Image (cartoon, rainbow, N blue to C red):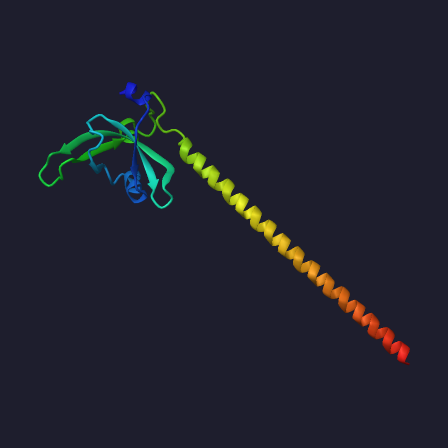
Length: 163
C-alpha cells in the first residue's frame, strides 16, 4: 500500500453536503458513473467542490475503495456503488502513511489568494472613490463658505456705508 501513496493521487469531486457527511464518518459509499473503472484498492482524493463558484474549496480527504458493486439489478448500466475507508480509518489518527497524502491543495490556495487580492483591490478602489467623492464635497463646501463670507462682508460694508 505504501507504493500507491507515493504516486499522484487522482481526485474525485464531491459536493459540500456530502463531504461533511464523509468527514463526520456517516458516509462511506458513493454512487457514481463508472467512467474511471473503479476497483477495490484504488486510492483517490475526495475533494470538496463548490458548484456555485466552480472550483475546489481546498478541503479534501484521502480514501481507499474497499468494495465495488456494479451490474446489480437496480443500478443503471455503467454506474457503480463503491464503499471506501478514509486514510484516518485505515492508519488511525496518530499513524501516517509512508508518504504524506494530506497536502496543501495549491490550486485551491492559489484561487483563494487571487480572490483575496481581488477583494483588497476592490476595497481599495471603493475607498479611493469615497475619498475622491468626499474631497469633491469638501471643495464644494469651501466654495459655498467663501461665497457666504464674501456676501456677509459686502453686506457689512454696505450697512456701514449707509449710516
